[in-house]
Amino acid sequence: MSATVFIDGAAGTTGLEIRDRLAGRSDIQIALLDEANRKDPAARRAALNDADFVILCLPDDAAREAVALIDNDRTRVIDASSAHRVAPGWTYGFAELPGQAARIAAATRVSNPGCYPTGFLALVAPLVAAGLLPAGHPLSVNATSGYSGGGKAMIAEFEGAGAAPTAFRAYALGLAHKHIAEMTQHAALTHAPIFAPAVANTYRGMVVEVPLHLHALPGRPTLAAVEDVLRHAYDGAALVSVAAGDAAAIAIEENAGTDRLTLRVCGNDATGHARLVATLDNLGKGAGGAAVQNLNIMAGVDPVAGLVS
Image (tube, rainbow, N blue to C red; front, side):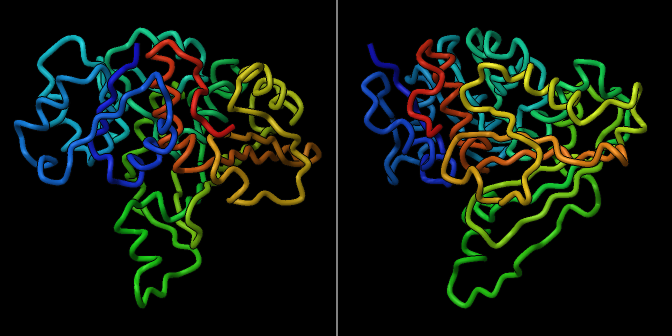
């Protein structure tokens, strides 16, 4: 028996990525509203309530509105917006975090992680859980995404007629980005990290980096000890891998076009300095790929069905 999946916001960047991954699957029937009905409140309410699963690819306020329109206890929701990532009653959809896949499988409301928090949490959460990194330790995260992370408006800015965009642009300089609460809560931190995001003139791909003064941590762990914790945390994970930390360079496009997440522990043991680095596709494991992975888990099928690994 196939499951019906209604993608609300299917014409957006993330919606299109999800549709690509679900195309051709015999176990999934995609429900879409045509242009004439897309903004019809009655048609939208019916689509939301008729589906077995709903994936929301909407701005935050519209996502909250969509959830409020669901008036049955059968339809299960995956929200790709940031509206519910720290909301009570919602399960956080990062399947590789300890115990999270089982929670996702049983959940009726799942919030997809943000692309930047995916890289940050993959690096930091296991170290905090293992006691290697104190929950109150001052942290910073530097991250750069391809411009598709800004949706259609930013894509038009970089690709539109007469566009002359910069090669690299830092933003959120007021240190109040909405991803910070998500990073803090799901890494079990007692202090928010300093989050320094940027956008680069490349369509897709992402590098997320967390620098650490290992000499300032309890026990002064080595690079190998940090890497050991990460390898143990993701042992057997189909989409998350820990690569050797001796790379000469790491490209933002490394995992572009895939649903993979690659982690590295780079640095210098002599100085006690480390650079924890994650690469992923902001549209893959950072968005559409994660939504499909969560859908698979909730539907009880192969978690990586339809994904590009």
